[in-house]
Length: 350
View 1 (cartoon, rainbow, N blue to C red):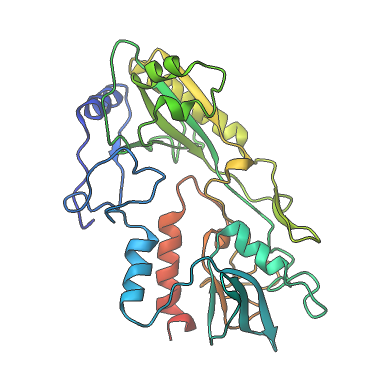
View 2 (view 1 turned 45 degrees about the vertical axis):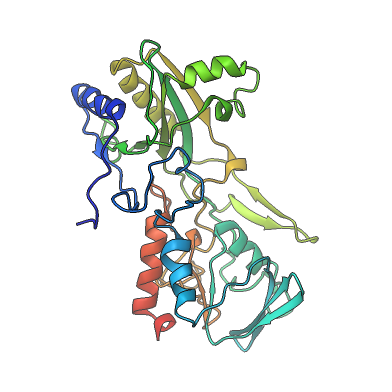
């Protein structure tokens, strides 16, 4: 069981839960990872913002701060790792640039966890005579199979009712995850933090702010998410000047389109007359994964099942890069679980 009970729905969301149930689906509470019975103040800025009262189960609160408190860890800020030095199949140093100049980091084990794009880019930058395709890249798969979920924001408005909810992200509908009604899986729909008119303006730039504020006062917002499938042509690229780009043609868009139609039909059945959609594209890089895929065969994967490089014996890459497929959920909990598993079951924790 989770250490905390579910965060209670605010009245508007509780009414929405009942409407959804009457429409034939089975809404469920989101797993929030919040200390809502203690530090959490249930503010409007939870979704997508750092928590000032440390009520979120994020890496800073649950990992970095406790690690530093032991006296056995340091946090270097404003410091960027530029390259890894490799000798005899092992990483011997990380070379970085800090506020006071070059920094050299030496250790027996190295963990790279910069995110699926930046981790791959750092490895690709390591091209030399011994590693013509980049570090840890004998498979040729570093940077390839980039995935980032097929996502859309949906804002549904019932013009007859205002939505006074402050903390909105407490409800999901997963009825279509395994079966969209015809035997094929689609994905999930999940409430997001309450969107304000000024936030809508970044997308609906031609609509007057007063109209967006009026709409936002009556809308409820969802993330509608389906899987992006791995494809070797979708990749992270680093040019001769070190600049990073991502190349992606979304795979699975027809599945996402079907999920969007199901979601909109469901919301109309719940009484929402106006539904707006903001699709995501590659510029948003949401839930990036797949660029250092794991597997048991070094010829067809970059990492082993515990995220250790097949090529470099003391390098682990533990972020979204290890994913073989993206599923249709936020990857954060899986990344955290894999990190714990790697420490418990590999030489990383020894």
